[in-house]
Structures are given as structure tokens and as C-alpha cells.
Length: 161
Image (cartoon, rainbow, N blue to C red; front, side):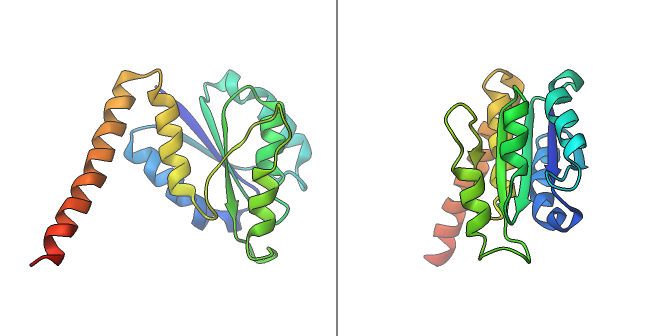
């Protein structure tokens, strides 16, 4: 079974990151959730980044606000795909500091970046990454996307009544 880690810099990020957790559980993906602060627990960050793949993790979703170093630091340490979720936090500059900190990674250290507070899309992207090599997951993603399409079609019918 595939496993995705959802990590964040502090518990204050959980309301945003819960969307990723919920989506992943909806795809029947095992989720490991943890608090890993790049600035307050650097030893934990190093251990987590270096060893996540040895624990069966397939993708890491890392959410962070403010300076948002967590996704990039995890990506620098791990061979796994990392999806960064910029979080608009109380110490944020309208979230732009988080967006740019995660988006502007140097060559060789990629972090897939979703929209500000876009944890739902991070969960979907993780499922798609897994679906690239797992036919069962691919079928679930296709079913999910068909549901999105049907919702739009039904909405269009409703406004024409």
C-alpha cells in the first residue's frame, strides 16, 4: 500500500493541511502526519528527510508558512518527490513569503508547489504521482476526475432551469 507523509512546521498549519489528509484518505492512501519544524527541530528534520523512504513513504507533502523552509530542506535531504504547500500564517506577508520560499528552489532540488493554502491539490497531486506506477490508484484518480466533470455538467444544467 502506498504511503504519503503530510508534515508541517507547527500545529497552526493543521487546519490548512487537513485538506490534504482528507483527500489522501478519500483515495485510501495511508497517511503519516507529523510536525517537523525546519527552525525549531532541525535534527528531526534531517532524520525525517533522510529516512522517510526507508519507512515506505512514497511522497512527502510539506506545508509551511512565513519563511517556509520545510519543503525545500526536506527536498534537499530526501530522494522522494516533495510537494510544498505555502501556508498563509499569522507572521506571513500575505502569504507571498511562503509562496516564493517554496517556489524559488535552486536547480537540482525540485519542490512541486501548489497554491497558497492549496493542500487539497497537494493531496490530489500525491495520488497522481502514485497513480503513475499503480494502476489501482490511477483508476481512483480517473474516477475522481470524472466526478469533477459530472459536477460541472450538473451545475450547468441547474443554472439553465
